Length: 383
Image 1 (cartoon, rainbow, N blue to C red):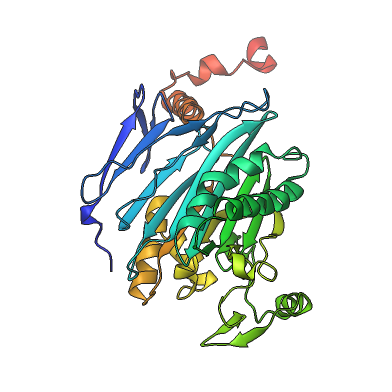
Image 2 (cartoon, rainbow, N blue to C red):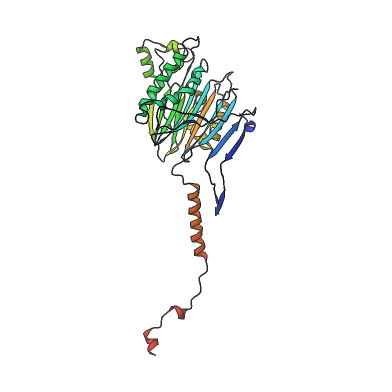
């Protein structure tokens, strides 16, 4: 089990003026600013908090793409962090751990931007194999390629599919003069307005919790999947058993970025699923197979829901996978949705109004005598 004592966190509040009001056993605390910057330090006190802005000059309708989370821990140990959207619509946390592996080949990425008036949020897990170069390349280029696609916003599914394959070609071109042949998975979730799009290549996975039920939004690309095996064999490849089912007896997944020697059979074309974000959608979990090898979908949802803070939920998932014996790198992202959440100022105004009404109802009223309150009858007046 991991020990959290070597992590140190600092919360910086910009222009924070706090007011509180108590009603019964509830206390509501309202600050002057909802913007929180969370900075996470590793055990060696190396600062890993960054806020990197990359300007896309290709369109005036696009705001800067903001990398809202920390850079990868170069030491390959343990890192975690969290972030919350300015509108309070969602919050997220991540956790990444080298685990029992000698090297770290997992990468993660979270970005946000505003395009054509719509807020866009992107979350990604990239699990390298045969080296870390392919996964690192995806972190550096995949989301930028997606958002620069000419049809992004109008046709998100097309943009995801073509950007995935474009990025794969760019990676292979960048590695053409090397002797390396590494590859990587990619499982990404893109939130555009009220629609969530999940694209997947390889055996990393994305699931959601909807009304308490775990629902996978990606299906692992394994060579023994009947449709994948048929596709590979139709392309002239073979699937054989070598400890597990492998393409050409080498690769244990049927789709991936990179893997030049198997590129004819191991494609980077993603499967894309769309999900409308409604009141029942509670959270989103993306993770590398270091988690999914030992933590079923249902367990992942239950574990993530035990923590209100998504960063704490992500850490708990990582720790659980390690405790259950995962022998791989373990990286996950937890995203929690806040539906119709009132602003702190609105809560305060509502409570103050209720207290004012209660105070008025409780104020003593002047006593009125029965003679003064009841008019005389005609008979009394006549007598």
